[in-house]
Image 1 (cartoon, rainbow, N blue to C red):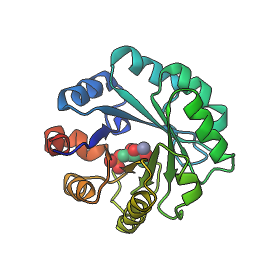
Image 2: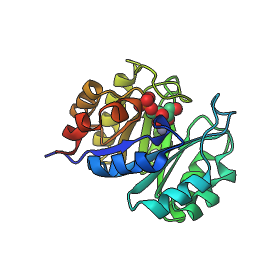
Image 3: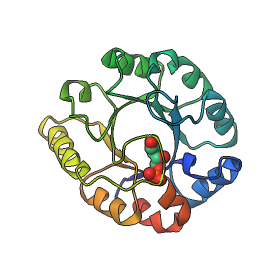
Length: 211
Ligand code: DX5
Ligand code: ZN
């Protein structure tokens, strides 16, 4: 019995048919819906806003895991909280007061997440402030990329830090997670498996995450 959370990323599905994506996620037994928010500055892509989160909230009771790939997340926390997000993840690479923002997200009643791009070293002082630490397995911006192998080292580092310091943050991995990689992530102690393209190409293949 593992306590893994599966969080399919709806960006990977047909964006004109997201209600079907929600139904597929619900039928799969996954507990979270991962929502990728991109501003065209922090990453070279533009995606969803608070309106989509509010609409998802009306259509589903699943936990809404909102990943903010934004240069200025500080400007957008409140609209996403009001839309019904359950977790808000911001990136270590932004120039805002990341520690202060993590606290503000938690004060709003959401889980606060801290994400690291593949080339960004772990910042352990900030890790201590987060409920969820998200390690990118790809350079953020687009679905369907290949998992970057160096991520394994960072997972091990983070896992050792958590255990060594008796911390309780969840470890999440996002980007390029195919079924075989998901199996190894669970073995490596990852708590939250985020998958877009691979999940929607065969949702039942990810059932093992939930057993
Ligand atoms: C990448 C996003 C990921 C991505 C996952 O910038 O944060 O959530 O959409 O999709 P796959 O699993 O296809 O890499
Ligand atoms: Zn994401």
